[in-house]
Structure formats: structure tokens, C-alpha cells
Length: 131
Image 1 (cartoon, helix red, strand yellow):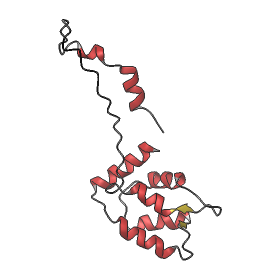
Image 2 (cartoon, helix red, strand yellow; image 1 turned 135 degrees about the vertical axis):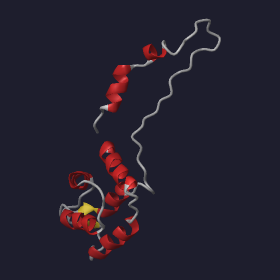
Image 3 (cartoon, rainbow, N blue to C red; image 1 turned 30 degrees about the vertical axis):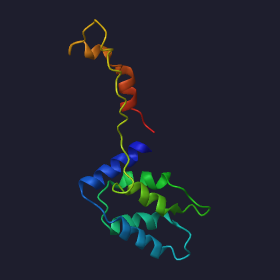
Image 4 (spheres, rainbow, N blue to C red; image 1 turned 45 degrees about the vertical axis):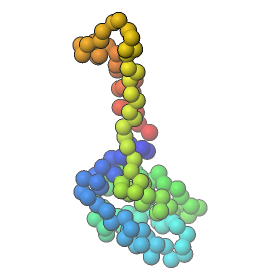
């Protein structure tokens, strides 16, 4: 789920899309019962009306992941919060600093030695991790 959100937020950020408050107002207007939920198709139509610059299949996949009610309607506030790269940014980087060598060590480590210190198996697993 995190990679999906990161991908969508990156697309919206690159297109400088920031119409989230107007989208929320539109969803609240469509939610005549005030339940906080809308049919998936209505949520999708709202995205199209506001020309959300994200790929359709990614938006639909995200809509499938948000909370649903007993009528299988999606929680639009949660959906819009996940889209909102400005107020709720999600980062794909999991930076874990490498342990610095002991400065008192007599063994010198040069640039050619550093690749041996990298755990490539863990690096690849974290890069290819799918949530």
C-alpha cells in the first residue's frame, strides 16, 4: 500500500496538483447523508472532474484499499488524505545509516572497500518490497 501511495503522490506532486480542499468540499456535497462514505464510482467521477493527474488503475487500486462501510462505499476522507502529498506526504525511502567505522581502529577503509560493507541482499529486498 505504501508504494502505491508514494507513486500516486509523486505523480500529483510532479503535476503540482493541490485541489484537495475543493475535492473534499465536492465529496461532502455529494454525501447528502453525511456518512463520510461515497460509492466508488462517485469517488472516481470526482477524481475525473478535478482532472487528478494520476493513472486510472492506480487510483482504482487505492480506492479498493480504503475503508468501506456496509454498503461497500469508500471513506472519501481517508482516500483524499492518502492522495494529499502536501499535508500527508509518504516517503518511500527507508534510510538506515550505516555504522561508521571505529575511528580508533588501525584498519583503514578506503572507497574500494565500502562495497563489501553493503548488505546487497537486504538492500534489494527493501527496494523490491511490495506492501
